Image 1 (tube, rainbow, N blue to C red):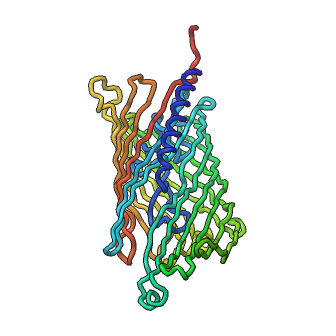
Image 2 (cartoon, rainbow, N blue to C red; image 1 turned 180 degrees about the horizontal axis):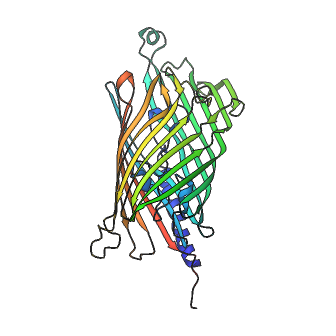
Image 3 (tube, rainbow, N blue to C red; image 1 turned 90 degrees about the vertical axis):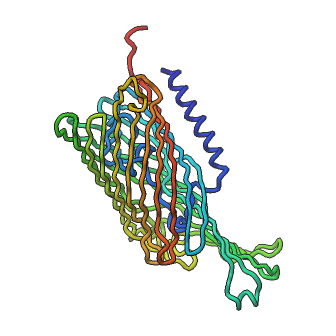
Length: 440
């Protein structure tokens, strides 16, 4: 048993270190012009298993994969096994606004989660995932002929980087073989930098460097339940619900403005505001889901999530609110998700591809903010497959592959249209640990 633990942990550490080094070669954890607003783009949670089915999971009970979207789902597992999931994501985006076109590619880690049983029908999990990402870099030049004629060429460069992560521990238990409940303790932490440079071609003018350095941390909780009802034969219906508490955020936002000329730098403004004093909060979130499954062969699910950001103060806090000439305002975010999975025959000894699990899904999301009064929504289609890598029926090791093809916003009202193709890969690690040897 010790050797098994060492092998798995060493492999996990090696993967994390290797991919982390590679990921650091890129400047961004994610990239989107819309991430200039608020806390950036909020990540769609879940492993490759969830992501390849539109992001569903609130009513999912599957003992072969880790599903941390509902803490009650952690009990849907073998009572003798250790499970882990490690995922990577590669995102390709194309942007359009009027006659302008651009693109960007990013590669990064998106989660690491482990779970193991506690006692009988209860289980424990721990993990680390991104909560939101900031990544943008764009420039413009002054086109007013009167200004250019007086002071020469003037350019504006705006760029931002950073992420907020969530580390969580959770546990769940099942009662009467039908009702499962669970809870998570979540810790948010991370740093965000948003910077703008004004540069003059005439060296007699001082260039300006301004922006915000933001540090965020906070603690919240998430609760979930699932109820499974047999409908006849192998078919069953599962109802799921989650509620994540809204929480006040700690940390600070440092605003600065420097004037630079040659080797001389003058501080025009430097102030530090604490987020808690300004009343900034992360919104609460409620989620509802329903699924149907036919034994170990197929499943279908629909999820709805809602989060009200209107009274969180995020659109009034320095560093999160107005950027340039665009007006950022918080609103209610909603998400509609549906997914389907089919496994032809997990125990087929002749055809490998009949043992694979195939998935598809779709989603429609309204973001937690508006840009100049315009809603920012996204929609997409997802596809995926899990390739089993072990023939032992007691073990569910596999590699999950997924693709998300979608679009965010449109070119109407001078908005930026963002089209993307995102590839995800998840490593499903499973082993039988908690079994007593009958013979020495």
